[in-house]
Image (tube, rainbow, N blue to C red; front, side, top):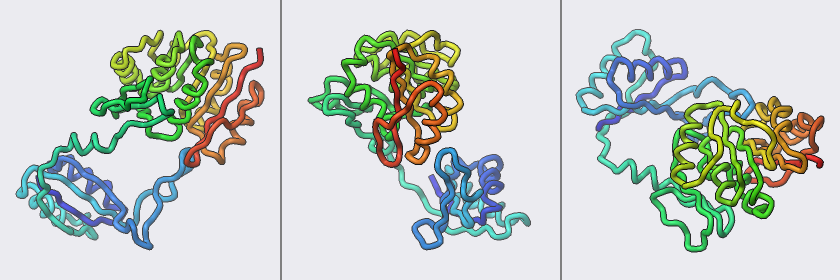
Length: 299
């Protein structure tokens, strides 16, 4: 395997990347800020719900992988021969040593402690001895591995409210990997429904529920959610949560609990206003700039 490293201005990043993949037989292309870790480093990705500060970095480093050195050299020569690639520079061509990419990827995901007795554990790890409840979950296409603060806060709330969760019906709206529905089921919630607009999330949730040997009543698209529930959880983002306010509140049974996550601290007032016709939201937890909000529907 050989890696071709190129330096490109912002205007060339997309066309050069497309040419590498579509025409020049590159196996993959990655793009990084060429000025990263310098005084010229440029923020590119904004916070959720906010526009990106810029369409691209002023200067980018492109790293393209090829099966052979000959293919990498030919790609560089063809690119530099084009009139439209003025400003593109070759920085390096180097052999990439063989590595166990599966093991490297797995090493990035360790067991996640929610409480001393409740853990999220990848399949290649042993569960801690003190763990009485374990969610077995591997990284996949759908959001939710327990590593993000929003997921951890939701699971932490479920674990610390175990008495209320046990025997309660629950809806996980926007289930992603199904981790919240699975966690609730392991803690004794029943019946549990998990829904998502993304078919890949539905498939992921079905697989993860099966792997964890939990019986979720429904795993499907949002239309599958029906009736009211003792607990309604939605870990999405602030903007869709505001739009979903009447729908989510309509699924809460009298005396039931609503949990909302995917909200930044600065967005708390917006969510309170959006849900005020139905419920009085309060902040239940916070971590790394994110908050968990919730409310109880009056009986």
